[in-house]
Amino acid sequence: MFKTIGSLIWGGEQDPTVATLSSGQLFKRWRKKNKPVQELIFKDAQAAIRRTSTRFQYQLVVTPVYKEGEEALLEEQGQELPDDYVQLLDAELNLYMEQADGITTFTWRQPSSVGVLSAA
Image: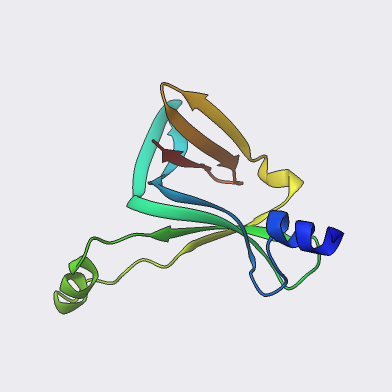
């Protein structure tokens, strides 16, 4: 019985996804000459926390989301589609969540910048 309850909470062994955020935007932030700079990486994105093949290790995966037909149109125009953003979750990442004005924001730190995923 506990194995069944655990599967409902943490997903089955076959499903690597632990949690998802169905929509949001991915930004990269850093400081340049003591001024904050923000770059939009994915206008529409979805995020997931997934298990890796190593026990007790998880990764944050942010995937761009396209409107119907948008992906094919970009490919026809010869534009390179961005890869998923993948980051191993560990203590050094300093992942935290904030909520304000109905917007949930997940922020994490990298050596050269700060990643931000905002979802309404």
